[in-house]
Image (cartoon, rainbow, N blue to C red):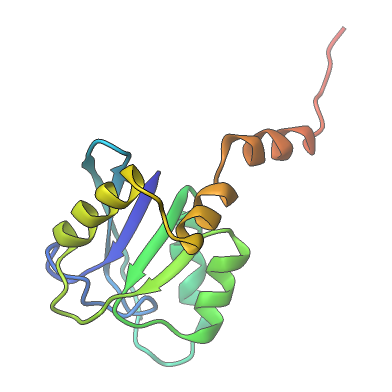
Length: 141
């Protein structure tokens, strides 16, 4: 599964979702985690209530299961949840991405808490198959 982190330094979870200029993406499974990419966002990202700046971020995170943030507004959190992306607030802006990833790998090997099981189920391949069934196919004869 893909996990995202709002960050200003690629080490800590220290950026507000709406004003984050960078979001780091990692692939995580039961054995390890791997860095995938850093998404970069430009333009006016001030915390000003401008909802338009959220759409590019939410679209860019379409295949992520979880996004860790230092802070997030209610509207942005609701929009992420609607897209089946679980926003999680970091314990502090000093919390390190590597620590969260290490703990997440350990948790996946044990008995994940209900919120994590729910997030994983929302992103299961069965869900993706259901979405494929909803698309219309064009048949050429």
